[in-house]
Length: 121
Length: 348
Length: 165
Image (tube, each protein chain N blue to C red):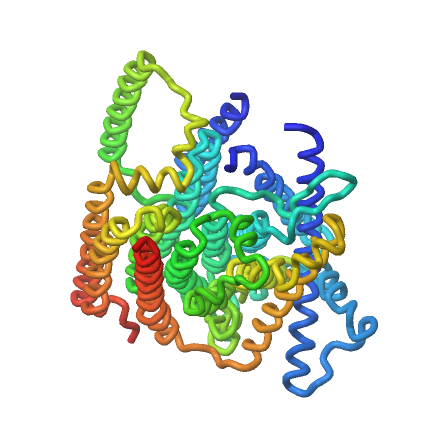
């Protein structure tokens, strides 16, 4: 059985990684050459064509639908973990209970597919 | 909490950190050598014997390059993007057992930074954080190509995360635990999980390619259409951080696949070796076996990169949502029915 | 206990940064940091499964959605455009209501006994699963209907947008 103290090494690893990232980002900032640059050099690179507007533009709502569906399915997947761990103990009853849960969501999934919400044209 | 515990864990964390860096650095070398071999070229051979010092030269070069931050970019987020990507990539290895418990000077040391009750979910969580580096970096650049790469990358990662989670669930039904240590111990000798979960492994493998943004799923970078995708505006070590993060992610996914499906440090005939060599030296053989598997997976990643062409975006999303997710669910259903049926049959 | 105060202090700092920073994307980043400190809180309480769920669902999924929404909007200026006095008054009233509610709940909380819940191991995945699939089976199944409704809603809204656009 694991206790909260088992998570301490993860924090240690996080600190080591954080230190490394801060160090390297600092070094590259300090020792990289600094030249007087023109405005043209600092514009966004768009294959040598002059930049029109900027990139802060709205994009297709389909990506947004994918993100929402991801959150929903992610929650579903999370719900399945406690079941999968105890799955053999639950036996047939647990199986039926989970199939009802999955069936409902599968229904939603079929609806999403039928509505062509995930079509990319 | 005694002092030995802290020293032991610090040493493990540092060793693992250096190891991760070395493997990631040499993956860049190996990638070029493998590419050269597959394309009948020589590859890097100037810096040191066989070009072995190439990663050092490349790494050093990155620090001596001019750091360019585009005038339209959001400065803090522009730096935060690659930092986050690199930071997150280091975290995955914390819960991986690299070998059996080893006895050093009479003290039993587990070759694992920490064994937590929810190890697999931790990996799942770390993977899900990988999106931010790409998204924030791409958005902060204020470049249309970067934004496109970032948005594509983010939706690709999140789509394949679901299939990945579902494929792990089928594995959990076989192992009945979320702790990596127990999963590794269960696969003693020949009982590797890939034998019980071949379909699950295949799904996991494909998702691992998508999560690390490797070819054939490298749409976020996609140099032929998007220049460099989310990396377009990056230079100096910030660009290096993204590249490094990709190689570290490849290492981490290889490690996870090796432990979850290919037995980790287990190999046939390990009992005899354990008896012959004792508790100090035999775990090292296990570590060697583990690294052999990891390197084999890394090689596989590279092999695929130079063999398979890139997917189109709609093909990618269709594969994720309409093929892998239904397959993963079917895999869960079949696994569940087989195991429950087996248990009921045994009770009769 | 001192660890709790350190983490709680960090939570409050990050939460304040979420509110006071002008750039919405910075806000989201600070919110991620806030959720990370919450994860540590859960671990201190030995609610390990909840901690990792908080990590995956809030830090990894919902915040990605937030970022998508922010990027979907037009963010050409860093400052928020809405500055009308009416909104400020409404905001002040809403904030005041929240404050009253919080103070009220604090008062009732002080009388309740605070029982430590570690060593029962209820926060571990195995035990949580057992409780979830026996005592809380109905809420669990109902949650699937909730998720279904959300799915249908999202698809309907997005499709409607597509036709008008």
